Amino acid sequence: MTDQHDDLADRVAATRAQLFDTLDAIEDKLNVPKQIGIAAAKVKRGIDQKPVPYLAGLAAGVAVVGGIVVTVLRRR
Image (cartoon, rainbow, N blue to C red; front, side, top):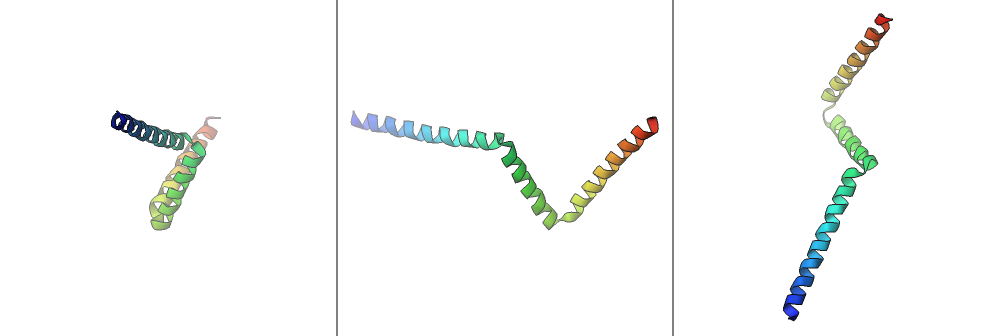
């Protein structure tokens, strides 16, 4: 009887620990400021390692925004 109780208690403790880990992972994913910080750190590392693709993306973004501004101003 004690072995069954100990086995059940061990399984409950393991399940509880797994539930806490899962809830922590969900909380991390839903924490927007933390996710923005992680993304910013990845971008900074990427820029340090290979800046050309990031500069090309920045230039493309500027060109798109500039094109939109010019189009809007011409319609007036």
